[in-house]
Length: 119
Image (tube, rainbow, N blue to C red; front, side, top):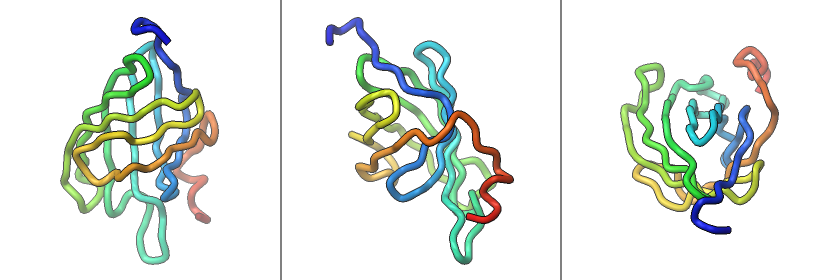
């Protein structure tokens, strides 16, 4: 791939290998992003952390700045670089935050909050 080629990813719901949901909207090379903790036995969807971000796709990487919003308990922010493997798989390669080296998989074009009720 030469420097001017850009890998693409799909818009929609993605999940990390920790099963946390991330909604991603791609518009050309811009990415808008909402992520939150998954529902657990004693925790609601987004109760621990709820993050928004904006970034750009450059080559085979997504460079994204993010911040927690005051829906969840955490109040962090940071920068993350995500390697685009293909249009439905990404891997965190570098981050300021707590994302580790997680792998994210595309799930579907749409999934609404109400669809997580039984999760």
